[in-house]
Image 1 (spheres, rainbow, N blue to C red):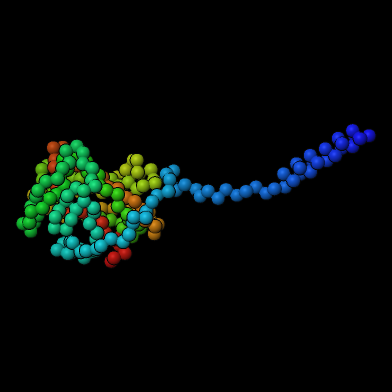
Image 2 (cartoon, rainbow, N blue to C red):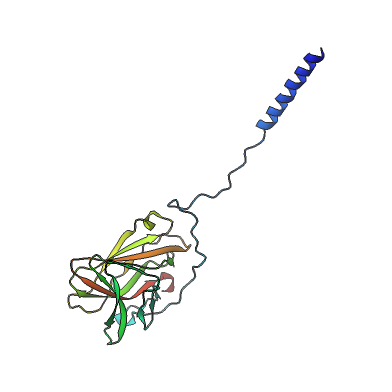
Length: 213
């Protein structure tokens, strides 16, 4: 009789333990989903509103712009933070006003990759001075946003070029294609020389924040 009672008690206790375990609610997973593109969180703590100017007033463009890194006002292109490949280099050149400055020179097939910059939906375009120093065609622009598939495979944007007289020309607006978010996005630009046996010079590359208009 003692043996039977012990078995019954053990069975009852085990049943209560199983019932209690199944009645505990499942814990929610509070881990945030990864951002688009499958990358980790993008650090934008270094991003802030840039200093603005109106560099293209002489071309009747009164928009406000910020200078792309690796350049300085009056000092031209110094290349700091840029990656130059395939013959892309820095050269001394003369601007339309007769001043001498440093410019980015990109031959056909050469590539220049900019430092990463911060933009948002209010930074939709860029413009630059460009000169066809030799040959024709133009410079192909590619955009890469960190945290998206374009970071590994940059997306094609506008092509810009000078004129047939080898004169400095203000490019048409270059579409940076940011998404519609008000949050900062980290952008890297690549310039690739087109044509055959051509050389292009780029100087004063500016990004335009629409919020400044």
